[in-house]
Length: 290
View 1 (cartoon, rainbow, N blue to C red):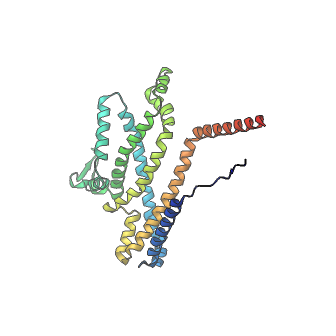
View 2 (tube, rainbow, N blue to C red):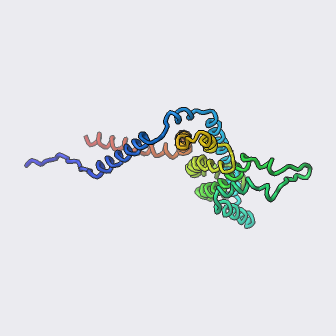
View 3 (cartoon, rainbow, N blue to C red):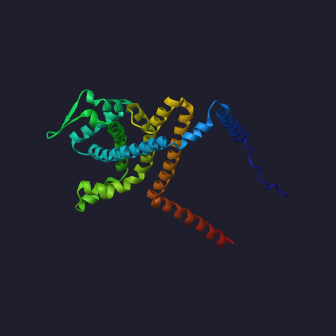
């Protein structure tokens, strides 16, 4: 008696329908922008405008500097948060509560208007006007950096907690201090857990830096606004700013993937090797049966 061994594939009609609907929707959106009242030659003209390129440079600069401040503060306050000293734990918790509990926009405005309550900065041997010290760049650095540090504290703390406590105990029995064990043993292992959210935070900070336009910091969006206030090409300049943000975020996403792969090399190699071993053993078993 003959049996029919032909495999009949399942028909996934829902996938085809949903895919067709999404493609049609995307085409409608693209067509709407094409036929809309957008002066595309103006978009091409200002895409590489020197003023916007300088604004893009300022955006990248404030993002990198703010992230550096956030990383340093995150490591410091994460260690304080895990300290056995109740005062340092309380102070770290207060910092996180304050800067995570208020909007970034509000923090930027407070730093920029600090001269209203502290007109003069006195160092004992010299005095400076606060309006000269708290420039838009410095105000943006304080506002973005301190806010980012509050989030980085929790990220670094979660990474440190992911490392087995026994390794710290073993390091202290070998004569290492707690800070030395943290620097040489705990933090290098915690980086595998810390890096992915740090990459997301960096990309998010790049976009959040656009809020610095509220305090007259000449980043990308502020430059675009200055131009469209003059030529009234509002949507065209906003499209240019959108394009540059997407380009930079895409490049940062590729960098993030590369860094994550680097820190996951040991784990990924082990996984690939185990898979290879399984395939090899299966192949040998099949040859033995034959």
